[in-house]
Length: 455
Image 1 (cartoon, helix red, strand yellow):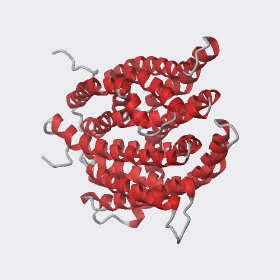
Image 2 (spheres, rainbow, N blue to C red; image 1 turned 45 degrees about the vertical axis):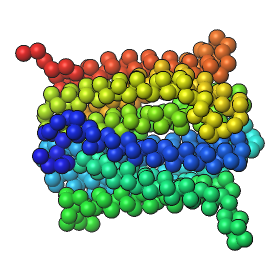
Image 3 (cartoon, rainbow, N blue to C red; image 1 turned 30 degrees about the vertical axis):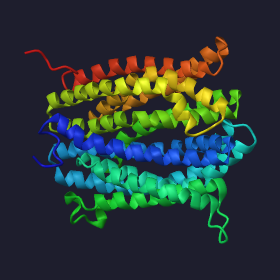
Image 4 (cartoon, rainbow, N blue to C red; image 1 turned 90 degrees about the vertical axis):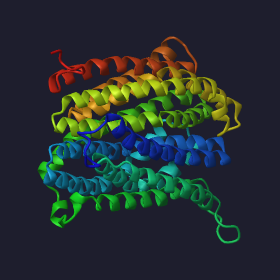
């Protein structure tokens, strides 16, 4: 069995080889962000709130980068499952050139719309100024994020999630040193850049991640002898990439817009509520990492087997993913309920921020298994090359549902900040029910259903 062939061999082995490195890579990516939150907290609550808002605006742009990674993972894994070597290489080369052009375009778009997004969800004052300064520097990290995610999609399609893990480990360690250096400078030589130094540190470290990931892509066997002409834009390849990318990216963008909706609702409760939400999200992300690694592994595994028309293995991969996910829930949910206060105090000593953050984490504990199933269904739909359904589910859950149900709980029923959390929970739960119905229908059409047909 070839190391990068996911169409044979034990399912547990493939998940172990893909999910564990992916989860570790995301762990260090999240810890990387946690370092940023920690150092922002050393300055002020306004700095933490500015970081949360500026980062949210930046990641609306990064939605295309996430989509590119998912698109290339799905397309390249499908081609690899069909044993189409030339098609695999062509898609990889076209994905990289597409990423370069899209990044340059988005940097211009971000410079124009970023300040308006930030102004929409903040009040004039210290934390808005912090968010604007942070965003204006961070936009230069777009190439590093964008091309690293695209390259990682290609590597994952070949069964390699270790490279990103290693890159993020190094970036995390570098960030620990770069953040204080860029913020405070060198005594007697340079005074540093203050809060904006956090963004400069991100630009430097993420550029290094991009260079390493691309070097790993070009070392793949399929890239041996690749020609420069293969990177020239090919409309047919670009259409295939865009067809897979747009639904995933738009769904991701809707998710981040949803984050702005939440922040818009929270601004009525003050900067402390926004800061608490930003810190609590980091804690939530750490506990979701094993799930994200596992569902990220599902995409190339299901993608290769779908390309090879081994539909029983596609189903097997999905149910194996769910079994692992429910086991993870037994650890994560009690942690969110009973250790949320301890985790919040690691990042802030503001009692109001801590109290609001704990309230979010308690509601989030109930949602953990639902998030797990939603993420796995999204991966399955992408593997079956039906990503448009991930978009419609996201539009309902995060575009309509979050805003509508928050309004119901706050504007109609008169809840305080708890109304924001209950609104999120209602949107997520109803979106999960819709996702299950959609996944069952798509599976019946393309692989004979989520369960094998009875003999």
